[in-house]
Image 1 (cartoon, helix red, strand yellow):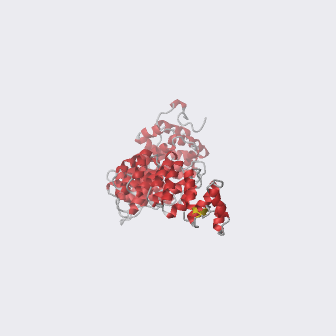
Image 2 (cartoon, helix red, strand yellow):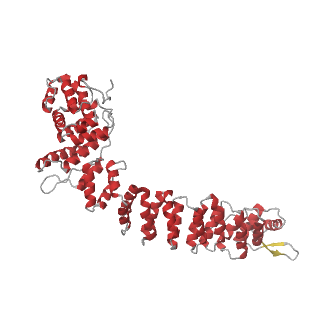
Image 3 (tube, helix red, strand yellow):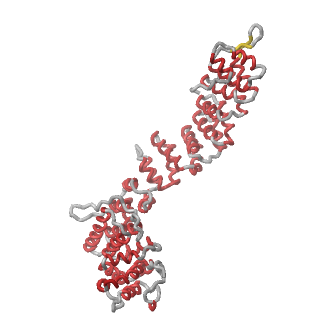
Length: 528
């Protein structure tokens, strides 16, 4: 028989399986060889202790009673659970520890721990906590070791003082913390548990009694990873009291893999909270990041609104950066903003599509290559240059543009290959004299890579300066443009009938730079 077969095992076949908490209690009594089937908890514990070595026979029934059936523990009568709590509260720790070691493979362990935390007495649960650490061959961290007994004592004291004897917040926090600690404790494995790095005991008020306020409940939950009704109620109380910002502050330092942090984040990470944070001046972007992490792509709408409408450059930039991190899925939310009449909004939305690598509607972006504002045209062309199907068209459009910044974008992109369709535009502009001087050298080198005769004509335009009296072609005066064109002729057209005489004359020049250019050695200047 395997020790993890919890559902069918019974020490007393005559009782049958799954008979409820009373049936399990009878098994404990039978294992201890108690003369009564239903002794009280204290009497059964004392009888087990008196059995000496034979007490080990109760280890497995105890483990099965605690972990055998979630449904059994959930539905057991209060008096049955009271007897079990009394038994555990009086049972020696070594025996309880041995019982837990037999249950190192527990199915649905978190659910079983949660039921134990909800239904056992404070004293019994504290004993279970202590024995569980012993069974794992570990010791709780000093802060946790200090906090849990304090909460247990406060739970008992405050309940005794309460008028209705009901559960207090201290007790609820105690139960949540213990359940969370049990869930991460590797029973029997000896591996280090995921325990909190630091815990502070509950703060004390003027009366000397520990005050467990909503904020302290939340903080403790984040430190321990505990979740439960007490934690949920404390979160709701903090939100209702307008302390959402304080909750977000607490989330900043919470571990990523933390159940309590995930619970709190779903409650405080709302669009309303994000909009409120983005409206502040200055914006606390560390807190914004906590909310965005909780909302995911749902945060895009508020961030787009801030990018378009905020009067603060810092806020717009911060919202922009966080939208880019959300990735391509922001595209459907951005495209309606492309209809905005303000140039800077349109430019920013196109830039967002580009930097987020969103699959934008190329046709809808293409219309902005003729926008009245050059900054919008430049952003649209940068986006189109990133797509193979629109790259050549974007280069052609950029090389037509009168704005220097847009033209630079086209020339830089053409370094990766000048489209044939762009050659006529580039040669016409170069030879007309209206081409910006700072870009002429780069443009001539680009033309030198194409086999087009239009490119040849443009290169000759910058190299030749008429003919001598005897009809020989004359070299133009040396300049950066002349050297670039001469070098391009040498690389692409060394034997062409009009180029060859010019290259021959350049090879005999007294100027070393001209001679080098005639061999195709001139390079694009560093400023290009």
